Length: 223
Image 1 (cartoon, rainbow, N blue to C red):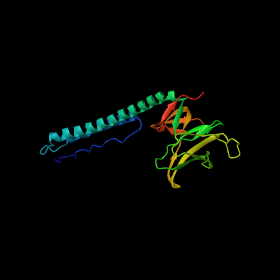
Image 2 (cartoon, one colour):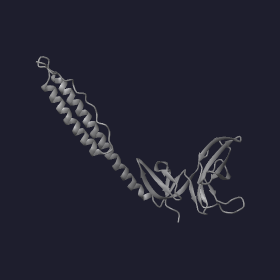
Image 3 (cartoon, rainbow, N blue to C red):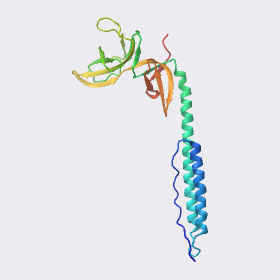
Image 4 (tube, rainbow, N blue to C red):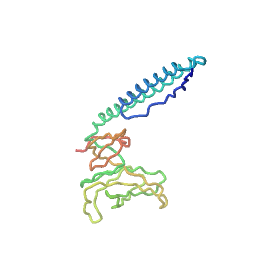
């Protein structure tokens, strides 16, 4: 009589999925298949050379570990999504306030206060003003130790600049050599808080968007 001896089944983790219910169903399905294979192995093993009982225990423990790992990942995904939503709810209070951040600011005719981060070794400094296309429209010379500066938005002929988004960059120099180029912070009104993937974005007046983690200060909107 031919004795059929099956090979020890190989346990593999189910592939990741986006849907938690799909992952759970996959684990349950794989576990049922694993039990069928294990039962068949026990039924058709060579009675003269049976599989050691510890091998069965090892297989069960291995699959159980894989199952728990998948379920843990599902739980972490669920908790992460919940925390993101809670964070979004908390940041909704920022809407209508002004966030200080290195991002383009909307100019509507009112002067914009700039907050440069000066380099200690600089002996001169200037701020480059760029429009929404990235083209340079103006340069402002400021003291190298200035903590703030005001951009009036007025051109060389005294006419106001067109309304729109403008960005600002500080050029720090030492002995007429550029030693640092850093974006300048401004206060911009927050119009929306948006969740994109795992990142929370602030939508500023004029349409510029920045990650919430780049905000260095929040204040009430100017009246």
